[in-house]
Image 1 (cartoon, rainbow, N blue to C red):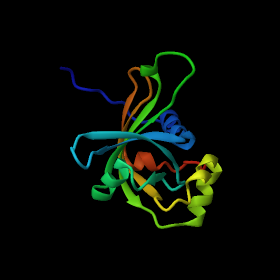
Image 2 (cartoon, helix red, strand yellow):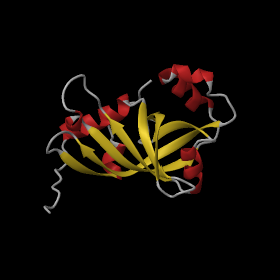
Image 3 (cartoon, rainbow, N blue to C red):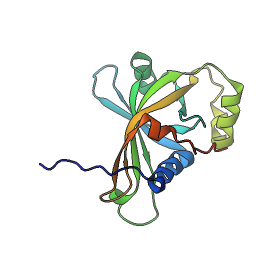
Length: 164
């Protein structure tokens, strides 16, 4: 079996990665199931927080919330879909994150609603809470033959935009 070859992250690829995070409205969260220990995946609403972290709004009853309460380590898959072409060549970002429950905060709530307006239906229900997801490391597959290992520094990105 051949050794995987990763490329060095350049400015163009860094911009792609940061653009994927800036435009992200949802992602797939992976945690160990609290009962079986097997991987559990869930599509979640997610957005950048403007400080190199990500914010997610999760229901406490959900398997993934209960798993994060026990062990804050998780995986997050961010995908960029295209209208045409082979989905296996579309950019995707696989992150290892550490989750932390956030205290109630009106600024986070307002920022969230700017991007996720339909969340008004459930955001104030007592079971829903905001979580911070801090990227620790990751892998960016930017297309065929374009794989990059990412450090926490790469993922913080000095030129990260703060989307509405």
